[in-house]
Length: 513
Image 1 (cartoon, rainbow, N blue to C red):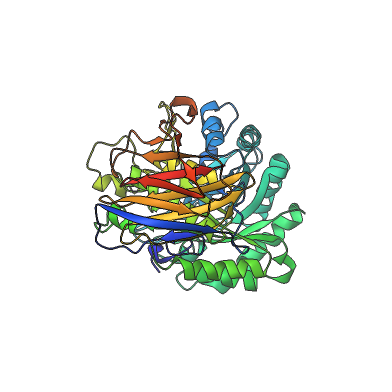
Image 2 (cartoon, rainbow, N blue to C red; image 1 turned 90 degrees about the vertical axis):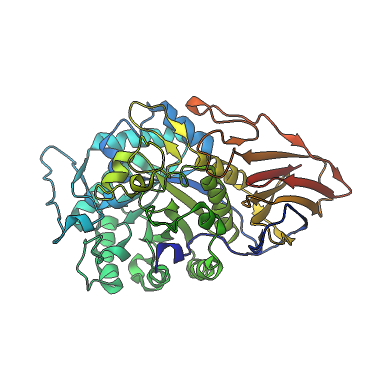
């Protein structure tokens, strides 16, 4: 399947989400929204929001460090309880130099034309001081860690030694280990980590050997797997076929999702990104059934708007913010335990693609980056750390953490829009994402008998392709992650009914107390 068809996330109707059918837009539509409690609706975990970075980022011990105060501040602004995942393509070429005498592994170079290969062509050395600094960074942010181990070009012994050091330093902030990154692609020529005939039975046999070695070195080791790119059937098969002696250690099923790609495909557009993917419900329901039947969670550990580094003018624009918040809450409504959107420094993301820079081929304006146009936090050397538009969408989605989803019944007619609602101890939250460029929405919200007051935050920008001037609650995120709501519009609630107007290409969060 293509990545777009791998539905660990994208958009379709769910019990706790009201979604329109896409049609011909009108200047304005009126809609009624009725909220109802649903005992079977999921509770969104406090650590739902997360970020994903290339493991090779640890070759710079000063990056994930408590001394990197700006990055600490941006992580804390996004979430006080987030999850950092380290992995990506570069993780298959990283090695842990435990001491001065630790030899480097042999660099695996696939046969044939390297231009057709999209994996790194270099090794990345990680030293103990990088793990030490990472532990301090996690303590400073309050975040937890998913740590990816090299499976593609390593050995069980090497992985076990690295895991033991990581577990010893990170302690109880270690969520779980992942062994390998996107193993379903190993046999492809663009990856080349395994021979063409290699398949799932080979994967689970080799994975089990690594897991046993790691468990012997780290008695409390826990795992998330299989961390696939596109083969959703691997997730359900893994859950069912993992060896019994390792099954209790597997606490999470994991996979990736990129909504679009590659960036130089002319069909990849803002309109297509925001149209959503109608197959999500069936695929995610299958994965959730497999997870719940075995007492595991499901987490989307790497993804974004467009694979292979993102598309400039889309992945770094306001459209990506609307996509991200809709995508994250869609997954939350289906019971997914968390979402980690991928990003990081351009140099490591470019290396992770074998030096290819497809986004640059379609850039219509001068770019300072070669890759990583989708990154939520731009943190390039010698440049000020900066929140990108997608970060605003993640912030808005995180306002639902700790809430229980509600059933939302409404008819949005032909507007390209979605509505989500959830309840927490002292109030209700309703989010409306109007992705339609032409249609505004006049929404009447009913069943609010317990609401005593209400206010609304809005997220908007000059246009869907705007890369600057995004605001949330009337405020931009200033340097050093300085942000607080500036505009919280009061909304009248009369006899359990509230009215809200959402202009085209914008989002609104109604907060009811």
